[in-house]
Structure formats: structure tokens, C-alpha cells
Image (cartoon, rainbow, N blue to C red; front, side):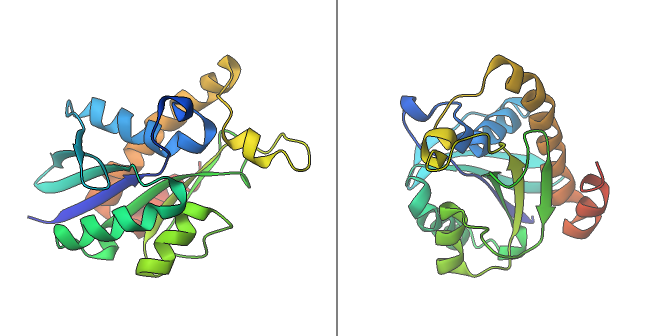
Length: 187
């Protein structure tokens, strides 16, 4: 059975719940809910297991804090013997407006500390789904912005995006990165 690691980046703790920086966790939660599986507190993170048409999925919400996300990713890839081509990381992105997302098969970390740490440990060749959180903050206000909660108006834009991100995960697992990029990057 082919195995996949789906990682929603975020930070543990009530103060980070549903903040812009935790949009990866929000997608992981939604995907787990769709598949009626729950997260268990495991090494380096919360882990849920499910399957999609004969493929085993490990859905991970690292508890290492963003800057050390690579520790959790590397551990679970090695523990479950999952190739990096079967890794999908879901992450917030300041460079995109709220409502936009983009899937890539590899590339730079774009200044994102979570992606940066993952790349230090496993390289750049893994898929990442970047979800726009906007950048409506004053100079020097980036940290406060990413740790702020979504407004009710923002949630109206975000909720269908999270549903689409769950579809991206299924497509990535079933159809592969190239077909999934062709299908979802056009929207």
C-alpha cells in the first residue's frame, strides 16, 4: 500500500488556534473531519491516519512550533518509510491575498520559517500547498498579522478555500502532483 504524509503547518496552543499562521492545521482538521478520523498525540505532533482508495495517509499537525517543523516531517517520513515525493505540506503564505492558493512540486521556502526548516532537513523536492492569508499590515507588523485571528468576513472566503484544499490533498494522492497542479492552480 502506498503511503503519503500530509502535513498542515501551525503552532500548538490555544493562543494560536485559528490564527492566520495555523491555516495548515485548519486544513488538516477539515480533512480529518471529512474522513471521520481523529488526531492522536504522537511524537512531534498530532497524527491522524486514514486511507483514500487503497492509499494510506498520515495527516500530521506538528507540535514542534513552526520554526522546527522539519523535525516532525523528517521523523514521520523516516518512521513510515514514506518517499519525499509522497509528502504534501500545507502552509500559510503572506505573498498571496486571502482566497488564493498555489500548489508546487518543489521550490524555495519563500521566507517561510516552517518551510525553511523542512528544507534544511530534507531538501526542496517536496510538494507544498501555499494558502494566501493576505498582507494587510503596517511595516513591522508581520508577526502580529500572522498570529491574528481571521475576521468573520475572512472566514467566508477561507471556508470554501479549505474545502478546495481538501480536494487538492485527495487529488495529490490519487492523480499525482502534475495533474493536481494543472487542475487546481488554474482556479
